Image (cartoon, rainbow, N blue to C red; front, side):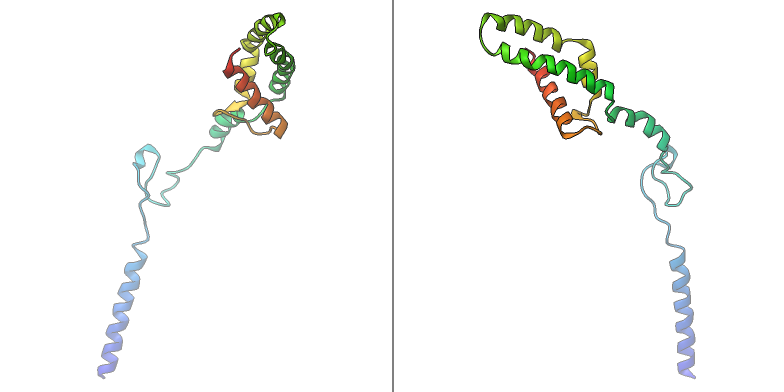
Length: 145
């Protein structure tokens, strides 16, 4: 009889323990729930991210556009011979430096170059050669002949 009383008591104690465990599984993730961050896990979308807004706001800035690439490539093809001529030290070097400054200050070139960079790095979708060209163009503009 004593063993049956112990086993009944043990079953009730285990039963209460299991019952308590089911009510303690809600966790708090931090932050203020009224700001749209944090809250209780499973709290009906408190941490929900609007994917469309992110796509429209950032992806367009981070992907290369073909027309920008063509424009920067065309101007870089003009700049390379001028860079070589400007380093010679001859009378033609002065004329080459003047033309070089004019090309580097061109508004369309700088706008295209800015669109081909995202956070000071070439944007997504460029080949290795295109990334190298964008980096060289930025370095040339930063040197500022």
